Length: 277
Length: 309
Image (cartoon, rainbow over all chains, first blue to last red; front, side, top):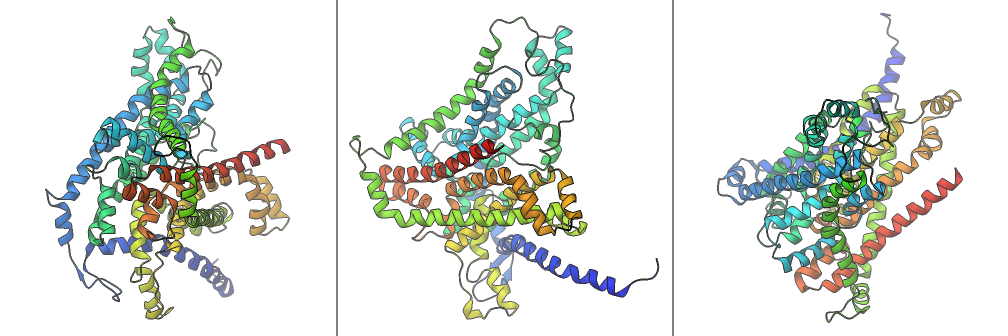
């Protein structure tokens, strides 16, 4: 096999040309915008018609990460809202998921679908009216109001994935615990919940990210007092401050990409196969 | 983002053994105070109440107020006014969303098809690693990225000029309907492609191999064998992204704020500038109608497919 056929090698190289071009184009389309964002994050001076920034630096980073900056306040608000949203989602979807997975429910399919509804309708008009209702309740511009909006939006992830996670727990383990005299609550907290924990964790990650990145609902319900990172980025971008917008966008990207890289560790195939069933 | 994660693993059977009792048996042998279903309803109730209070009620309110005047009487004035002011924007919205959906369909079938039928393992691995990235990027970030990338002095034009493909004077901003379509396609293709690739991966390979043995080319196998079998998955993915595109306000607001624009931007404008809930809700009603039309099309199509079986 030491003999190398030159025509075959050449043919192999030629088949790589269209393939390489297509993959290269795709890579450009996908990473071009990301690169542009990255450049803006470190650009001090950049204007038309210069191809690349004239001056690089981190002075805008100092401004964003200054302890009393708007960005840090928005980050704190965003994380607070996202954590509260996860807590609210878990509080209602752990019981609901358990019931959907283990108990006999009338109209089970319809109940599952009901949680998809908030994602299956164009949402802007709904948020407008949520804001109108919340205005009369004094919930507009409060953290609680925004958390409620995000919770409803995130329920489809938390209920569907939690139900799938409980469904994937081996029933015989629960039965064994019951045979040995454990009560239903003790069985749930000692056996079912710990075994379903990775799936519950995965659903929480989805809810957290949904909440962190949510814009439209916060835009209508959060005004005028709640400024989350997406709103800050929107205002900076629309105001022409591309550096601040790019840095804020990068802050938003870190948890999204990071969580998605580890999500497969939490979301096992046996749970995934049951989502939505 | 939208909707539950589709996955390539969805087709795999569950690895855990089935329960002893099977699905029909009561969950746990217990001293029961209440019947099983009552506990179930009680446990599901808080979550359902959240959806009812903070989604269904405002949804109903928006549908009702589309047909109510400021005095509370029934009227068609809002709808008439919405059509007078924004009929161009409605057509514009529908056109953008349909065009984006068509492009997403073509690209996701192409990506899924290459992942399933592609002969070169390195190229398949590279593509699998590449195509998913936009899935993890929030819409608002995607909008800001495209705002800088597609601008007149954005990286795209700069690179085209730098490589001599266009002259500096030819550089044009793509921040109009084209920018919105590009952003939507960029963001939604991986989502649909992931679903499509998952469905394709769980197909029975024997028909594909048989066609290949008979000498069918890869394009023909994709068009005549693979795509017809995964059409339900493709349709669901496209409908979900159709609704997502109708709901996303940040992208048209940031990329194409001037008229003609999408009706999501108009709704926000009616509220922020005029406090005009009537027309805003009438526009909302139009967006439900668009989503409903697609849903109806899907159901009709699904029923017909079920009947043919």
